[in-house]
Image 1 (cartoon, helix red, strand yellow):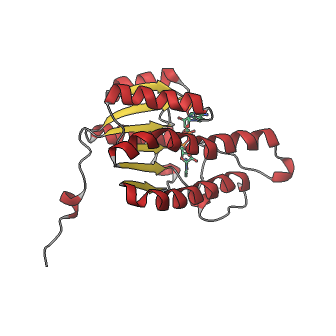
Image 2 (spheres, helix red, strand yellow):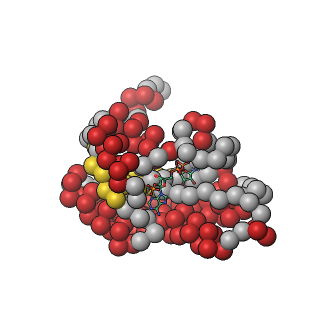
Image 3 (cartoon, protein in one colour):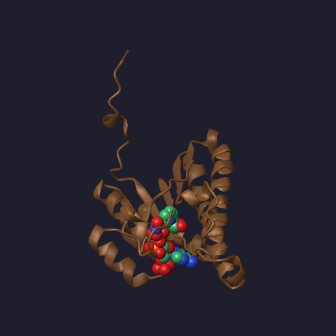
Length: 203
Ligand SMILES: NC(=O)c1ccc[n+]([C@@H]2O[C@H](COP(=O)([O-])OP(=O)(O)OC[C@H]3O[C@@H](n4cnc5c(N)ncnc54)[C@H](OP(=O)(O)O)[C@@H]3O)[C@@H](O)[C@H]2O)c1
């Protein structure tokens, strides 16, 4: 049987055009640096344009200000990305916010904001990149998930609900795009490995 060299089998990232949302800090920023270090051409997006600019300088990326809760803003981000890099080979949707605490003491306005960013923000981003990926017949969509998307965690039920929604979205989307050359996944992370600006241990 032919031996497969897994290192060689890994597709090269050189010249891949990759859009990272939530790239101004934490996991998005760390991932953008890692991808750029492996030769990818990065488009880095978030609301804090000053932070994006300094990252863009550091890793030779293209910064785009975007609020993922606004479909209009997200569409403009994708247009700018395609105009700059010619295509989008991959989306890493990392933009997200965190909330813990008892539901009894919670503020519904905070829950709405969390759902808008963590769930609708992901849907907006995917919706906006899909036309280009479908036209090119290829693409990778990676949505930043969490262990909290796989098991309900009692100290963060609202956050956990948002990540469960993301997991369901990822599974359904993967099935929809299976025959179209577009791969979909929802990787999970833990803060100690990413240097995120979070609040201590978060699954
Ligand atoms: N840290 C962890 O332990 C952990 C574990 C599992 C999963 N996650 C997930 O990983 C992702 C990133 O978390 P993190 O720890 O890296 O958090 P973080 O350091 O706080 O970064 C969050 C990023 O999202 C961006 N963002 C927030 N609201 C946005 C909006 N409305 N529009 C556009 N961008 C927005 C922020 O940028 P601006 O404020 O500049 O917009 C920032 O770049 C999230 O989806 C989170 O749920 C984190």
